[in-house]
Length: 161
Ligand code: HEC
Image (cartoon, rainbow, N blue to C red):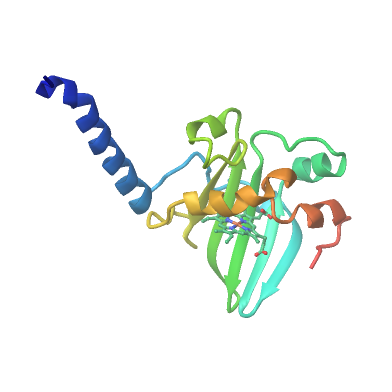
Protein backbone atom coordinates (compact mmCIF):
# COMPACT_ATOMS: atom_id res chain seq x y z
CA UNK A 1 0.00 0.00 0.00
CA UNK A 2 1.33 3.45 -0.94
CA UNK A 3 1.86 5.92 1.83
CA UNK A 4 1.77 9.64 1.35
CA UNK A 5 5.53 9.67 1.95
CA UNK A 6 6.19 7.59 -1.15
CA UNK A 7 4.37 10.22 -3.19
CA UNK A 8 6.42 13.16 -2.02
CA UNK A 9 9.08 12.89 -4.71
CA UNK A 10 6.37 12.87 -7.39
CA UNK A 11 4.65 15.90 -5.87
CA UNK A 12 7.97 17.71 -5.65
CA UNK A 13 8.65 16.86 -9.27
CA UNK A 14 5.31 18.23 -10.43
CA UNK A 15 5.72 21.45 -8.47
CA UNK A 16 9.30 21.72 -9.63
CA UNK A 17 8.29 21.36 -13.27
CA UNK A 18 5.51 23.92 -12.95
CA UNK A 19 7.90 26.31 -11.25
CA UNK A 20 10.48 25.84 -13.97
CA UNK A 21 7.98 26.36 -16.79
CA UNK A 22 6.66 29.52 -15.15
CA UNK A 23 10.19 30.81 -14.74
CA UNK A 24 11.10 30.16 -18.34
CA UNK A 25 8.10 31.98 -19.73
CA UNK A 26 8.33 35.02 -17.51
CA UNK A 27 11.93 35.86 -17.03
CA UNK A 28 15.30 34.48 -17.67
CA UNK A 29 18.52 36.17 -16.76
CA UNK A 30 21.40 34.18 -18.23
CA UNK A 31 25.17 34.47 -18.08
CA UNK A 32 25.23 36.48 -21.30
CA UNK A 33 26.13 40.04 -20.37
CA UNK A 34 25.98 43.30 -22.25
CA UNK A 35 29.57 43.83 -23.49
CA UNK A 36 31.35 46.69 -21.79
CA UNK A 37 33.42 47.26 -24.94
CA UNK A 38 30.67 47.61 -27.54
CA UNK A 39 32.57 50.46 -29.24
CA UNK A 40 35.62 48.25 -29.71
CA UNK A 41 33.79 45.35 -31.31
CA UNK A 42 34.22 44.77 -35.04
CA UNK A 43 31.14 45.44 -37.18
CA UNK A 44 31.49 42.73 -39.84
CA UNK A 45 28.02 42.38 -41.35
CA UNK A 46 24.88 44.41 -42.04
CA UNK A 47 21.55 42.80 -42.80
CA UNK A 48 18.61 44.88 -44.06
CA UNK A 49 15.08 43.54 -44.07
CA UNK A 50 12.18 45.95 -44.59
CA UNK A 51 12.48 48.72 -41.99
CA UNK A 52 14.98 46.70 -39.95
CA UNK A 53 18.74 47.22 -40.20
CA UNK A 54 20.94 44.85 -38.23
CA UNK A 55 24.59 45.43 -37.50
CA UNK A 56 26.45 42.29 -36.41
CA UNK A 57 29.53 42.74 -34.25
CA UNK A 58 32.08 40.61 -32.47
CA UNK A 59 35.61 40.76 -31.09
CA UNK A 60 38.73 40.97 -33.22
CA UNK A 61 39.87 37.69 -31.61
CA UNK A 62 36.72 35.91 -32.81
CA UNK A 63 37.16 37.26 -36.35
CA UNK A 64 40.75 35.98 -36.38
CA UNK A 65 39.77 32.61 -34.91
CA UNK A 66 37.14 31.98 -37.59
CA UNK A 67 39.51 33.11 -40.34
CA UNK A 68 42.16 30.71 -39.03
CA UNK A 69 39.70 27.84 -38.66
CA UNK A 70 40.07 27.84 -34.86
CA UNK A 71 37.30 27.63 -32.33
CA UNK A 72 35.93 30.92 -31.03
CA UNK A 73 37.45 31.72 -27.62
CA UNK A 74 35.49 31.70 -24.36
CA UNK A 75 34.49 35.18 -23.29
CA UNK A 76 33.51 36.17 -26.84
CA UNK A 77 30.45 38.34 -27.37
CA UNK A 78 28.40 38.54 -30.55
CA UNK A 79 25.99 41.45 -30.74
CA UNK A 80 23.18 42.04 -33.18
CA UNK A 81 22.15 45.69 -33.00
CA UNK A 82 18.64 46.01 -34.39
CA UNK A 83 17.94 49.53 -35.70
CA UNK A 84 14.50 50.79 -36.67
CA UNK A 85 14.10 54.30 -38.10
CA UNK A 86 17.76 54.95 -37.29
CA UNK A 87 17.31 54.25 -33.56
CA UNK A 88 18.38 51.19 -31.58
CA UNK A 89 15.29 49.03 -31.14
CA UNK A 90 17.00 46.18 -29.24
CA UNK A 91 20.30 44.35 -28.82
CA UNK A 92 20.60 40.58 -29.18
CA UNK A 93 23.68 39.16 -27.46
CA UNK A 94 25.38 35.76 -27.49
CA UNK A 95 28.27 35.09 -25.15
CA UNK A 96 30.38 31.97 -24.77
CA UNK A 97 31.92 30.69 -21.53
CA UNK A 98 33.62 27.55 -20.35
CA UNK A 99 31.07 24.89 -19.41
CA UNK A 100 28.11 27.24 -19.88
CA UNK A 101 26.32 24.70 -22.07
CA UNK A 102 26.03 22.21 -19.22
CA UNK A 103 23.66 24.60 -17.44
CA UNK A 104 20.96 23.70 -19.96
CA UNK A 105 19.37 20.36 -20.76
CA UNK A 106 20.94 18.79 -23.83
CA UNK A 107 17.96 19.37 -26.10
CA UNK A 108 18.18 23.08 -25.45
CA UNK A 109 21.95 23.48 -25.48
CA UNK A 110 23.83 25.61 -28.03
CA UNK A 111 27.42 24.59 -27.37
CA UNK A 112 28.71 26.86 -24.61
CA UNK A 113 26.75 29.90 -25.85
CA UNK A 114 24.13 31.69 -23.78
CA UNK A 115 21.76 34.34 -25.14
CA UNK A 116 20.14 37.55 -24.00
CA UNK A 117 17.83 40.27 -25.30
CA UNK A 118 18.68 43.77 -24.09
CA UNK A 119 16.46 46.82 -24.43
CA UNK A 120 17.87 50.08 -25.86
CA UNK A 121 18.74 51.17 -22.31
CA UNK A 122 20.80 47.94 -22.09
CA UNK A 123 18.66 46.32 -19.40
CA UNK A 124 17.44 42.76 -19.92
CA UNK A 125 14.08 42.20 -21.55
CA UNK A 126 12.59 40.06 -18.80
CA UNK A 127 9.58 39.17 -20.92
CA UNK A 128 11.70 37.01 -23.22
CA UNK A 129 12.56 33.36 -22.88
CA UNK A 130 15.96 32.67 -24.42
CA UNK A 131 14.98 29.06 -25.15
CA UNK A 132 13.57 30.45 -28.37
CA UNK A 133 16.91 32.00 -29.30
CA UNK A 134 18.64 28.68 -28.66
CA UNK A 135 16.09 26.63 -30.52
CA UNK A 136 16.57 28.65 -33.70
CA UNK A 137 20.37 28.94 -33.41
CA UNK A 138 20.63 25.15 -32.83
CA UNK A 139 20.13 24.69 -36.57
CA UNK A 140 23.62 26.23 -37.00
CA UNK A 141 25.42 23.72 -34.80
CA UNK A 142 27.88 23.04 -37.64
CA UNK A 143 28.84 26.75 -37.76
CA UNK A 144 29.32 27.31 -34.03
CA UNK A 145 25.63 28.24 -33.69
CA UNK A 146 26.17 31.42 -35.73
CA UNK A 147 23.95 32.49 -38.58
CA UNK A 148 26.52 34.86 -40.06
CA UNK A 149 29.49 32.50 -39.99
CA UNK A 150 29.80 32.85 -43.79
CA UNK A 151 29.95 36.65 -43.57
CA UNK A 152 32.59 36.34 -40.86
CA UNK A 153 34.73 34.13 -43.10
CA UNK A 154 34.24 36.55 -45.97
CA UNK A 155 34.98 39.69 -43.92
CA UNK A 156 38.21 41.39 -45.00
CA UNK A 157 37.85 44.71 -43.22
CA UNK A 158 34.87 45.91 -45.26
CA UNK A 159 31.43 45.31 -43.75
CA UNK A 160 29.68 42.47 -45.60
CA UNK A 161 26.11 43.29 -46.61
C1 HEC B 1 13.75 32.27 -35.88
C2 HEC B 1 15.18 32.13 -35.72
C3 HEC B 1 15.93 32.98 -34.73
C4 HEC B 1 15.60 33.27 -33.44
C5 HEC B 1 14.36 32.88 -32.66
C6 HEC B 1 16.70 34.06 -32.92
N1 HEC B 1 17.67 34.23 -33.85
FE1 HEC B 1 19.43 35.18 -33.60
N2 HEC B 1 19.76 35.07 -35.60
C7 HEC B 1 18.95 34.44 -36.52
C8 HEC B 1 19.42 34.76 -37.86
C9 HEC B 1 18.81 34.22 -39.15
C10 HEC B 1 20.53 35.60 -37.71
C11 HEC B 1 21.37 36.26 -38.81
C12 HEC B 1 20.92 37.70 -38.98
C13 HEC B 1 19.63 37.79 -39.74
O1 HEC B 1 19.46 37.13 -40.77
O2 HEC B 1 18.75 38.57 -39.27
C14 HEC B 1 20.74 35.74 -36.26
C15 HEC B 1 21.81 36.43 -35.72
C16 HEC B 1 22.03 36.57 -34.38
C17 HEC B 1 23.22 37.13 -33.79
C18 HEC B 1 24.48 37.54 -34.53
C19 HEC B 1 25.42 36.31 -34.61
C20 HEC B 1 24.92 35.28 -35.60
O3 HEC B 1 24.38 34.23 -35.18
O4 HEC B 1 25.04 35.50 -36.81
C21 HEC B 1 23.01 37.17 -32.45
C22 HEC B 1 23.96 37.71 -31.40
C23 HEC B 1 21.69 36.63 -32.20
N3 HEC B 1 21.12 36.25 -33.39
C24 HEC B 1 21.11 36.51 -30.94
C25 HEC B 1 19.81 36.07 -30.74
C26 HEC B 1 19.08 36.19 -29.49
C27 HEC B 1 19.63 36.79 -28.21
C28 HEC B 1 17.85 35.66 -29.69
C29 HEC B 1 16.69 35.55 -28.72
C30 HEC B 1 16.30 36.75 -28.00
C31 HEC B 1 17.81 35.21 -31.07
N4 HEC B 1 19.00 35.46 -31.67
C32 HEC B 1 16.73 34.57 -31.64
C33 HEC B 1 17.90 33.63 -36.22
C34 HEC B 1 17.23 33.62 -34.99
